[in-house]
Amino acid sequence: MKVGVVTFPGSLDDVDAQRAVRIGGHEAVALWHGDHDLRGVDAVVLPGGFSYGDYLRCGAISRFSPVMTEVVAAAERGMPVLGICNGFQILCESHLLPGALIRNTEQRFLCLDQPLRVENNRTPWTSSYDEGAEIVVALKNGEGSFVADAETLDRLEGEGQVVARYLGNPNGSLRDIAGICNERGNVVGLMPHPEHSVEDLTGTGTDGLGFFTSLAAGVFA
Amino acid sequence: MPRVVVDVMPKPEILDPQGKAVLGALPRLGFSGVADVRQGKRFELEIEGEASEEVLAQVHQMAETLLSNPVIENFTVRVEDASGAEVLA
Image (tube, rainbow over all chains, first blue to last red):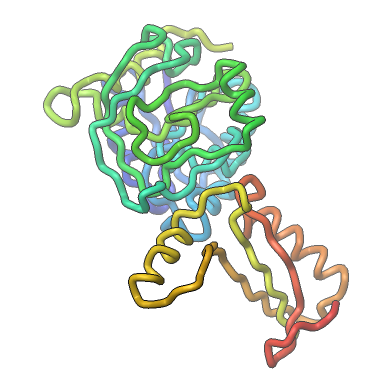
């Protein structure tokens, strides 16, 4: 599959995400924030970083970049989209996912090896995992605390839209939520960084690779 | 040139870690009597021409679309004159 990775001004993890895509068995296609088309890709990754310097709010300005118009339209047609960290923030600002990410409860930027539980393995990004699988991947964020109103949280839990939960909540995210998906399941946002955990040489092991091999299983609509 | 001010505040039910940190710092500096602190953002928009109702409606749209995130923040819009005094729109 051809997997696009968008680079915004201030993206940091775009090259790691491209590498993870290739290790996952796919062709990585570099997309630029100013692009008006998605170059024929089958899926899109919005990588981590500090797009537009996190000015105004994390992801608030990236949301209006030309490529996001295309990503939103493709996501609504069912294309798999994965937003990692800043990418998750962009998906929330774009209203592709509910809720928002605010500053960590303890005010600190965190950089950890973070244990997670995969709660939903029916998305195109998580089908390689067993439901309930416990994995460890890198986590690094300053504004990673997931919030939404109680009704939205109930709906996310009731509809199985919680994709991953923290084992040991690092940042105050409500109901330990580390990642969610939209109703259809094709759009996934995740605060931790599976793209940093795909090779034994670096990172926390290879637990993150499943996010990039799942696409091959082809379970999406 | 009229100035339109948009104040953006975290919703009351949203935890405000920055406000909490400020609240925690005040007694350490010897200031007492503050029960709570919330931290927000203030935007000053210098308007070309008059701050008409139409312009203010546009500013509302700007605030909803870009300046605030309605999931976590509330905003207010008001007009100020050059001295900073509030003008009734």
